[in-house]
Image 1 (cartoon, one colour):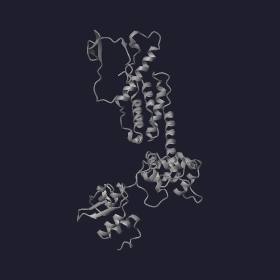
Image 2: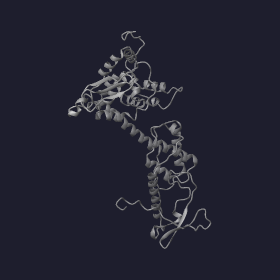
Image 3: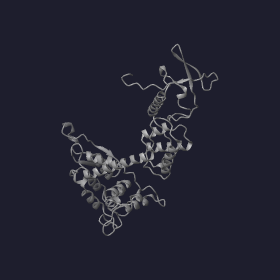
Image 4: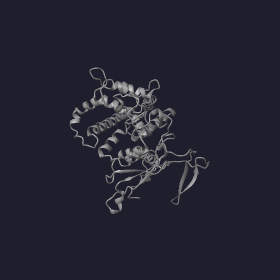
Length: 416
């Protein structure tokens, strides 16, 4: 079988590989050499030579011999094993052009949405490039920009018949607008519709060798839109308005937790909590039930691991950093002290407060990551201005506690 006599069932890549295999080894080497891009440093030509039977190939820049004369290239010979075309691929990856700023901007904008890497349809369908760009982005872009109706049924959060790839494909297919014959619009037609929009007219013309600013602009706009939608969901899910750091009514808190729990059970990954909202919940809880505490942990985990689905996060624990926990405890105790001091007759000299104003046992202040160990509270007394331990909660000689004082503020860098 000659290179020009390939089966009709072969794809273009398969036919090229078969043709290369049918060539003599020496011609493979010369063909691979011709397929190399110019040297990235000096623009010289790649030179491939045989290193011997079973030893691979040498590859170098044609200008490396002039390096000592300060006018050549520093890319000296490098021996690589394998097929000649593997050597060509290595050289082309090493000397490929540096991505432009527009390319990097497009890659950063695409990255949050390119989260689907499943198998693509084995036939040439217009939506193939949509798959490669990310399912969620494609659905959102088409629904928002091209006015697709009934977007809620195409949100991609459910899986039918255990076939995730087919389900997502059907979702995108349902979201795609159709032409007058009922066929899905080709991506080139979608691009033409985007280019004719008012936002596109304000974008500068594309520059040769750089990513299209129009495409970059729409990716960024979609990402910003998603963040705004995410903020709306946060406010809906966590509608707690506290005028002071005191326990809230159980009914309002339980309603919020039930809403969170129902969304987590459905597998929605669009409900997230900001650190401020999470701390507000913790400050509001005095004695949460195990169900409420578990729901909060799941919500916090979903906020911290937002690139996983809620279903994958269900068994994970929330573990803030020591710095985050310390800051939260300081803020919470300081706020409690302000509330206690605002009550008539509670202020005393030296900053000490009556023990009646201290937080009650069981108050949730924060979760601090640490090894499992028993609770132990050391009681400290001052003698001649120096502290010493007089007992613990396990001791029988424990003196009664009458006053408490919040922790002092963290000193600034200048005070340290």
